[in-house]
Amino acid sequence: MTWAAYILPVLFAAVLILAAVRKVKAYDCFAEGVKGVVPLLTSLFPYIAGVTVLAELFEASGLSAGLRSALSPVFSALGVPEEIAPLFLIKPFSGSGSLSLLGDLLSRYGADSYVGRCASVVYASGETVFYLSAIYFAGAKGKRPALPVLIAFAANFVSAVLGCLFCRIM
Image (cartoon, rainbow, N blue to C red; front, side):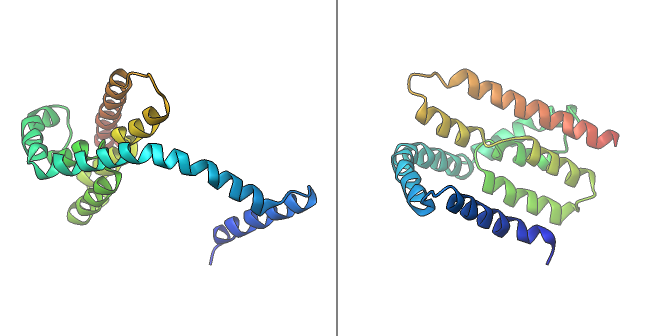
C-alpha cells in the first residue's frame, strides 16, 4: 500500500480533531449540510433525467451514426482519426458512455497508437456539456443557456482538434 492510501483517513481524522479542539459538533454540522442538499437534488433531478434520456435517444435513434458519417470528411481534413469520431459526439452527452468508448478504443488500437493518444486527449480535453449545463442552469433562473452551451461546444471541439494535432506532432 502506498502513502497515497493514507491521505483520506488522515484528512478525515484531522477534521475531527480540529472540530473537537474548536468544540464544534461535527456530526450535527454534517447533518445540517445534508439537509441543504435535498432541495438542490430535487431541483436538479428533472434536468439530469432529461439529459440522460436525450443521450440515450441520440445513440439509439441512429442520429449519432449519421452525424458521425457526415462529419467524417471534416474530421479527416482536421487530422482527427475517423475512429474517434464517436467519442467527439458522445462526450458532450455522457461521461460514462465516452469512458466506455475510450476503453474500447484503447483496447482495440493500444494506448501508444495515434488513435489511442488522440482518444485520450479528446476524452480529457472535453466536458459533458449538457450535464453541466443542466446542473448550472437548474440553479440559475432566468438565464439563457444557448450561448454558453455553444461556447462550451466550440471550446470542446477546438481543444480536441488541437490535442490531436499535438499528438501528431509529438
